[in-house]
Length: 195
Image (cartoon, rainbow, N blue to C red):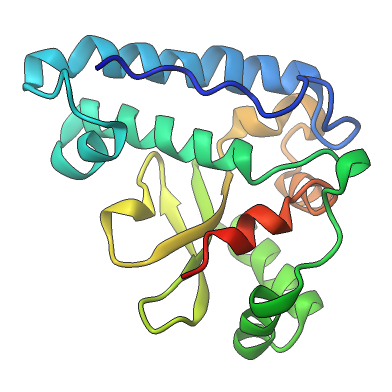
């Protein structure tokens, strides 16, 4: 079963001015596509030609696992973003808001901790809002292409910290990119990932 490039759930310019169409052309159209192509090239030789993407991420190592994890991570990220004009941004509600408040104190402190954690990562990777097996939430970074679906925590939201995710729009200012992303988070999607 060939892995396909997940279509963006909105037009390539829909997240502007927070994330440009040019960035999405680079990040989705070039990098995400390259990872999909690599998985499809490598999976058959590893005996994983008919495996699902999740099976490949969890059941392989090396280059195939790295590319598959990045495909999964990116597809998950796109679903967690929503144009501001369509209701993206704002603050979480309900059980998600309560879980964030229990762990971080309030939403403002959560955002501050998220930014501190994301900007502290040296090099490329991801920042994740995760739900632990006990139902609590936490933040974690993964280096390079690592994905939390290989562990026990449940991903609620993931954001790429690879330079190509923000360099066209924000140059090297990862902190400005993080600040802009709050305008386009789809909190309904994030909440839907909770157990």
